Amino acid sequence: MADKPRSPIESGCPDAFQYMHPVMRKNYGAWKYHEHPRPGVLRHVGYSGDEIWTVRVGTQRILDIFTLRKLCDIGDEYADGYIHFTIRSNVEYMVADEAKVESLIKAIEDAGFIVGGTKNSVTMISHTQGWLHCDIPGTDASGVVKSMMDELIDEFRENNMPNRVHITTSCCQINCGGQGDIAINVQHTKPPKINHDLVSNVCERPSVVARCPVAAIRPAMVNGKPSLEVDEKKCICCGACFPPCPPMQINDAEHTKLAIWVGGNHSNARGKPTFQKLVAAGIPNNPPRWPEANAIVKRILKAYKEGAKDWERINDWIERIGWPRFFEVTNLPFTKYHVDTWRGARNSLNASTHIRF
Image (cartoon, rainbow, N blue to C red; front, side):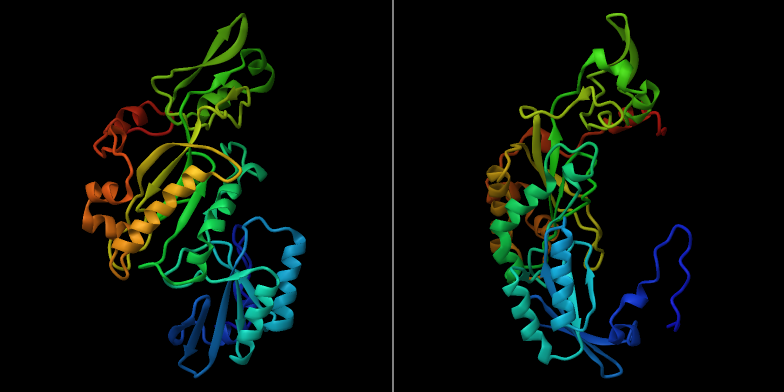
């Protein structure tokens, strides 16, 4: 390893090595093994004989400055002054002395945080920005996560699942939250309603036309004013037209729903990566606690926990028992919308302004 941090390229990030714990820098790429002494704690042992303990803490993704300072103060006082955030917004503290682990965990829990999220657990739910930053949210993604983790916190704290469970939420159908063993996404069910009186004053019409992924929007004259119209047979209700043209309102309490997908897996450790598939649609977008969506997720996790073999991810479990059995044990209705034989994408994508094949 280089003694000095590398110079970041113009489009890159600073060298992370300068922020790593000294034991991690010294043993980078030279770890002999690691073990899991208790939920939320990892122990890594290097070929050099060095050891380092990692304590993982669950946090909400959107953190205020006061919470960040509190987390850093805990790291300075009880750890070795080094922390890092995981991709799922957990905080990990690293200590080189085992004697510090218990006092660190006590300080974390006394401050109101939860230690867990390792090994066979439900990890912290990753989510998109929602109303805080996103320009096309259909719901409060962080609110869905908060309500769901309140009910799944014991599964985060303990290691009682057959394997790790990654849950994601996305506040629109673009699905920036990514694939997950279970994914909760917004589902718009109606094309946008257009306020034709405002389009010419607010929207740059060529940009709106170009934004549609299936070329369902075209310029039009309505009541003598320049406006837009939507071909509802082509529209896939994605909401991509709303950011460049707010008068094309697609989000409303009646027609904006939630959908749940399962079986997504990026890993190829034990099998091929898999795409997630729809298992429940038309779920009420019902803040602030989203009880209907939470009940379905808990039902899926219960069936998975009772029926999967050790180390089977959700996609492996479903592949073994088959989709008909999955819908049976989870007591979810199977409809024509779950049939995975649709081939209309070739026609709709050929109509797109971006894709030809």
